[in-house]
Image (cartoon, rainbow, N blue to C red; front, side, top):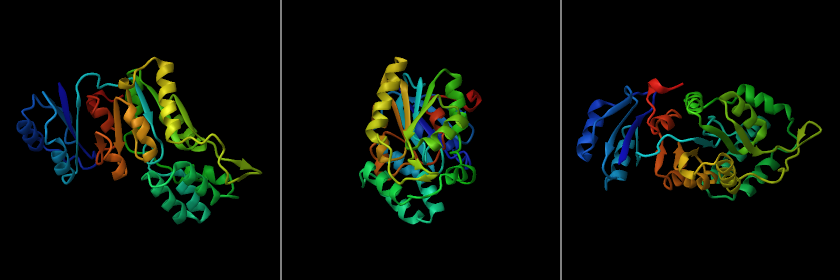
Length: 290
């Protein structure tokens, strides 16, 4: 048995009954279950439709996401999340660079790295080099003035944790930011790179080991082993090329507002919904949110 879930941007709430019914009828699906009025609905299927991705493409033009997945084991026991442009709406290193006056240069390198065009470690080293000598006080300034959370993150963490799930934040960014994000949202642990600081200023030199794609995969294995969980019991979410390893290992690997080259390699692609989409695809209704 499979489940098809249709999801709209909660701000638009433009998922109509006719759209859901039309797809259900075309695919010979079962009874429709509304998860949130105008935002999310699902129905069961006996098999994955052959035209799944063509329908997905058509729905993109309407501002709707479509996920088709196995019905069994949808509610996960663990969340493994990227931070930058996933749990928060910014790339922290880009914000530091903007304050330092090298924003355009660093943002261009970040975009290429997240798209998989540049080696992550090399890109991180190059970007940090442009921040050499920046006052460490800027970190607090960026957190206070520039960091905003991705909509739906609080609902996602509270609801999954209320159901006993373990939540880990694993970022190619920096502990100076993941600590704040993890504490605010309620993550059980966080892993990230360490910013080199000496005499109150950024050294511009990465502190090793550098946490990139392979380190995220290692975190996946470490935490699931510690908790006695299988990969099928994990939901992972990210947006960049360095997230693909953990996304492919997870029972539900979610490409959230991801770079096109990243989304193309994932079966669960959320381009319009926010982080509450990760609850809807687990079968949680709005009334179930903690």
